[in-house]
Image (tube, rainbow, N blue to C red):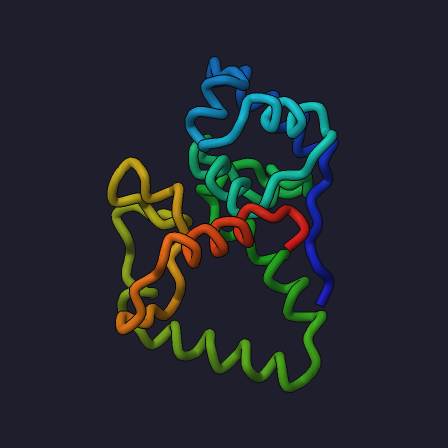
Length: 166
């Protein structure tokens, strides 16, 4: 499957456009996303690519399509879900026959569940933070509650999450 990459230059231009349109500065953005203002400046100038989790957070903050923010020629807005159909078809066509069967099975499974077929009051593409600091941390899919993490374990996990090359 073709991996999507971030076009640093287009990302920077689009981020700059969003910041200007919303009266944001590198300082306010740095504070909002717990980053340094030089990091935001590097994003805007195209010198550095943001992590995908940062891009998703920024897209949620500005209510735009994260794939658009990454530099792809897709709709900037999230409202029209039918615009996702060509992208889904593109991914589907990349798959082999086994992968295509799995997609169909999964789509059938989803279509049989009311929570995915009944109208929603508000469609939210991203998880909504429960409190102001939820966007600052990531939780593992499974937690072993029998282990109490030490400060060293926590620091090691944070170092891994902060590593741009990981």
